[in-house]
Length: 88
Image (tube, rainbow, N blue to C red):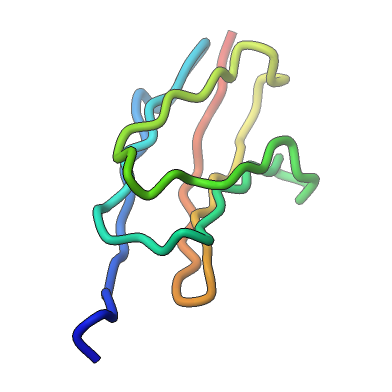
C-alpha cells in the first residue's frame, strides 16, 4: 500500500530534564497518534493527541514529581516508548 508508513523513532531531549522536554516526532504519522506520559508505576500523568503536522512538541515537566517517566507514542500501527528522567 502506497499510503502506509513504517514510521518509528522519536527523540526526546534534554534527558534528564528539569523544566521542559522537546519531543521530535517523525513525519508521516497518522492523525490518531497519541503521546502518553506515565510514571514508573504505570499511572498516566498526561495524554494528548499529537498533531502530525507539528514535528516538534514542547512539554512542560516542571510540575512532575522527580523520577522516571515513560513517554509512549502510539496509534494503531506503532507503539514506542522512551524513558525520561525528571530532576529538580
